[in-house]
Image (cartoon, rainbow, N blue to C red; front, side):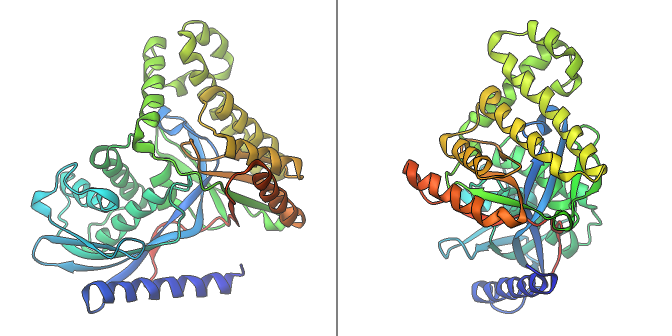
Length: 393
């Protein structure tokens, strides 16, 4: 998509959000904001281990048209929902008090109030083209869109990392998913044309240029359409295992074990915890390797790093599934430079680094492999590093 075409699409999406607002509530919103989904080049399940991540924002985003209210009440409407409006009073907000998708924006109101920010009521209408359950952080996009809208509606003066951490707090403490900061930091802080190298311990990051078209490369996302639910306990179990391993090793987080000390550290752990440690330590090193390759202007060399990351997620962390494994294998067999699953796991999407002139061939071979295996047809699209949360109207 050209720059002009992307701008036109964004303007159309903002207009649709405003129209959705008018349909739900009448009148016009005070503004329209957007927060994107994300891909993650490398660095999976490292964020809650205080390690390194390398995400980039997608052009796919959640947009929210919002208007202040003076009565302390909140109304939430989603164009992708069932047509109903969730409504509650701010004074009644508590974890678990708002069910379903509305818990994510409600959690942001709660987290802001809990942190002492003077946020009042609002009407919000959401519209999103971030695929749900695809490992592309649709929940973080919903939270971060809410956070930037409320920040600007109420003049809170928050910066992008501050909004991201409040959105993470909403997901952890209100929704009940013990995620790290990767998704919200990516949705809030990414810059178009770059990946965001983030140290999740210090929450310091820098933008790393990622201009793949300039070197004839593309990032292909394959949404397997196998849905996952990180609130089902599997994700929490993995995190608990990592925390247990860190405690047994006497370190603050598994990030504190380096590659040189991996073998010795494994010997000190029960057999069932060793693969978790091995993945985290090697994945942190893969992030550092990827950043070094991008800094050196050699993005083609990222391919083997991606594929090694998938093998680790499959064999050590055990969060892949037959569909993601097949997508990786088929993409690589068709000539991709490398591929891996993204996100929390148990379904979701695969990211493949592909020569631009082989993109159609790789897509075709992946679709053919899915059909031959009797799997549902995947959805595919190119990932273009895009802008983090911002006002669009």
